[in-house]
Length: 607
Image (tube, rainbow, N blue to C red):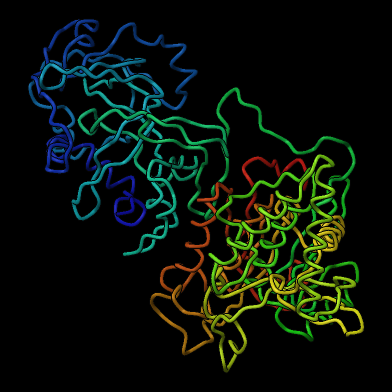
């Protein structure tokens, strides 16, 4: 259960808990799995050194103590108190006496007699645990209903107060389910590692949460590694982190380890050109963001929309943009299949893409048949190969294809004029979803088509695996298309932006789903949008939508999208903006999610 939902304590509530030592002891020794500690009676002494050396709750300070002038520098907000010998002579806890007398201490300014850098705990079974500054622990804490939880803290301060009690001050870290992405009774982050945690922002940690606890609240010591953002997750640790989280703004931002340099993509004083792909573009979409400064030149290179009239308007408004009249799913499939062709027919192409994301370019009915055809082609090519090299093999392959075309009576192919994806997937038949995909495209329900001109015939669309296109002609077309960036492959797109259709989540839709909204077919385009991000891995992403994505089902729509991007190791920020403040002549609020790669420094380019 999220600490933010049920376990966040107001300062006054925490003061009451801290003042009640018996309650703290009971809290940390309940059946929540925390390790019970030895509770030895304090060895009272009239000497300051002897008193600090005593054993309390199984803990021993590891000397030497931090000098007062150094402690004042490290913890300037902690006041220094004079050691009170009378506080150590009573068998009754002075804090308990204060509580009974109605005197409530201010825990944020609790005075310290001494600071230390480390402490040792004598555990049961003769186990010893040592904790020092910057070590991590799991802490037992309770919510308002009394239910116990375990949180993760980094120890920033160890001290003993003037009453003889020992405390540590820590900085909270979130598990994914404790961040602003938490949704009641839903797990939206199954694709995020359970070992990944997020450092609470200074605002969250210092304002909303209790950060001072007695040693009895410590459950166990854990190993946590701070890694360079975007690097490979470590092994052999309990947790790892790379980002800081601020609940106020749904923000996850990179935080680099001390001593590691923040990478910048700027290598020259000239403005960097960022090529954008605009989805659900309409007549202009988000392309108003196009701009040029002394550091960046943003231009929309590709646009995708399902409506023909809107694509015609877009072409008129942005004649230099490659405009596609198709759905986002179909466009993504086209780019994936084209990437396969580029890797086959183009030299010196390095594409950072998972092989699982590249579908086969073959017939949809029987993938095995496609593999067999490839095997036969490879065998024929191998037989035709001679000492003269690959050129003769290609010529033999071309002659073989000419023979097949002649046997079928098909005119020769003169030119290739286009590529598209054909499919037999289920589509909507009425309403706003008419013609839109209702299922994902797979190798079994779609194929690649080419627009070819045959001798003596008009250009027509044919399935690539049936068209018998000469390899040299196909290679030339692929190379020319790739060079012009008419169809992008991973590495070509710097910015992805768009606003997936909102019919399924809009508050004006009285028939929209109220629960399980992600299963509504009208909301499937958010998945398609982030599939594009996952394939192209652009440096920046901007998604716009209605504010209701934060309202319905506790913000499931927005939070699931953010969780998907976090799993891709992006930095994320979401919020609500007034469209009129960005050049739109309307008084309306819109939600916006902005994302950027961990390895790009946005301040170097956009400030």
